[in-house]
Length: 118
Image (cartoon, rainbow, N blue to C red; front, side, top):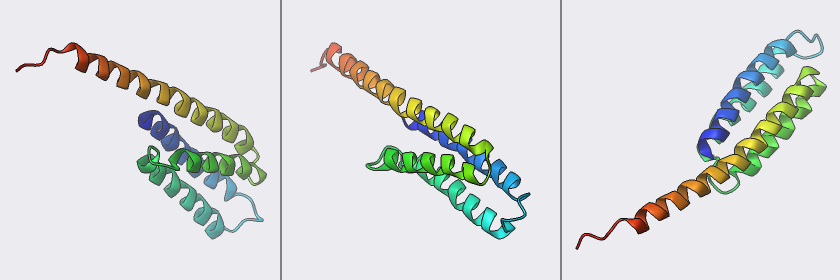
């Protein structure tokens, strides 16, 4: 699960950076505000890569997905990108857990099928 979720978060890191560039063009938003918010969100993406398998990591990822969708109020294209990345996040979590379960079953089978060398 860690690999799939981290890949999604790294993609979001870049999307948030590009959205920050687009948001800078808005005369109602100050550059410092845009880059403070974008920088914090980008940092959270990287930090979540390290804690995604710990308790609460996936929930924090969902909070980030909601924030990404909500950023569409400032950069309208982010409504679309937020939904796309929320779907990718769901797929990463869902299929990542299935892969982890399959790996655990395979390891258990391999362990039980090897004869004990006594």
